[in-house]
Length: 128
Image (cartoon, rainbow, N blue to C red):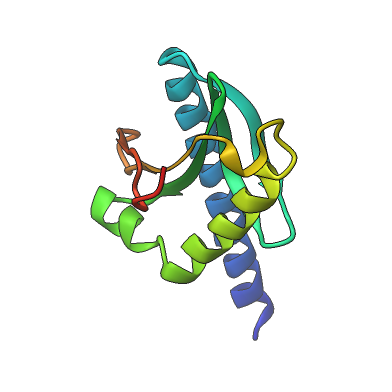
């Protein structure tokens, strides 16, 4: 790999990282406007990372944030493998909650397109 190629790849990676952070901030603000409390950002468990964890009364909402040029491209980036990691991390997280596995949970996917528009898919994985 040439130096120029490596620099270009690093630059794209940094831009993607910052776009992801910006999308997470935007989604967190959206949930807060709707009355949720953001309990955690980028919480890391043994199985992987959860972008946002929102508190809804005694319940917990695990939010996977995806940003891309279009909503369709963003949703395509949610893989079965990623969902499995999210479930594993969520299980670890609720294990530390007062009600443990009796905690009411929901898994949302939050999409941000290239225009900064937001689309939230509640209960996206059919659990909760």
